[in-house]
Image (cartoon, one colour):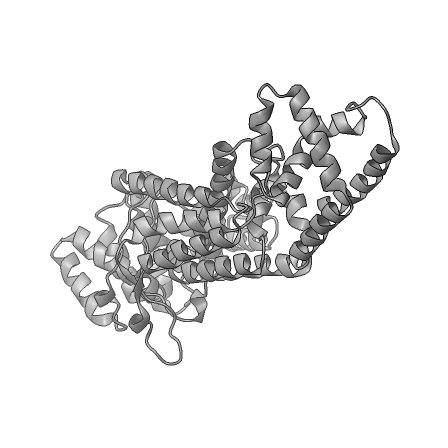
Length: 470
């Protein structure tokens, strides 16, 4: 598998829709479910202190540690060194202690103070558990699909949210259109999962909930930085300014990312967000990408430089044609790849791209050029003849074999049936039948094919085909 990234992209059709979807989803979750999280937690912590629960539980926890810990003084010292919030989380998360205390094992009696504690404690824990990022945040001992993926859509506060969305928006604007929406989204979600696993591995006994998109963003940033390096990436055309005038190298995001990480670390010193994992996730994805890029196991990358972003493709197309005619196919293909996004609907370009790649029928260029020709929307005689000629040639030459999607097969079958090209349509309909293509059962294409066969004096063949579909 390989893919080619192109840096010249502009126009509304190339909006980073995956990035927009991620931003809107995260923002909506915060507004609908998380807007009151911090005020709710502050109120819970204040009530925990004023109700006497903190004093009572801390006293009992110290008694528990003295009785059961091998080195109680060290445990007590560690408890005293933490903040009130961390003490609250630690005490509530120690299930053995909670069971011990709930059953009155500290003194063997259900005295009045203990009964009052039970009532207050139950009410407080219910309120605590109802807070969104406590319920769905990632914490050791609570690993499920919801928290493993859901934590990256939750945030600890408005500054945490906006800073992450700022970096995500900038990153998506520069990267998504180069990697493709599906790959960008896949890397984002996978990076968030890697960050979660890394956080739990680094601190398996952690009690504080991990939330935030930082891990997912760090992973995408690490991968994209290695892929794109110092190359400049054209942004959108804004307010009449040409996109190439706004071109920036990806690594300009790094200072923003580092600064935001430091700011958040200062604001959220209790480590609700695992900042160390962000750095780790960045390094892991960057390293893996570097290895894959070096060995070319996955990536066959051709990136155009800023100077090659000229809006007129004609001179570059002529240069590629000259290179192809001189049989310098590799250099011609290198140039044609850079033109692909700009000229993908240009039949002249696609014809040249296909003819040049015929010398390498096993290459991704050959398959990509053929698929682009088959996907042409134009139905003028020149485009239709190009599609037919390409189909015949592609089926004969493709190595290790042709790559057809169901959608392309359906488009070709419709075209060939309309043109009554039985030799070509026979092969396509047979292939669709072998693949059990869904479009055979959801359209009238089989009946149109049977009608064509009947017109050609092959009524029995048409009838048998329909029987096989039914």
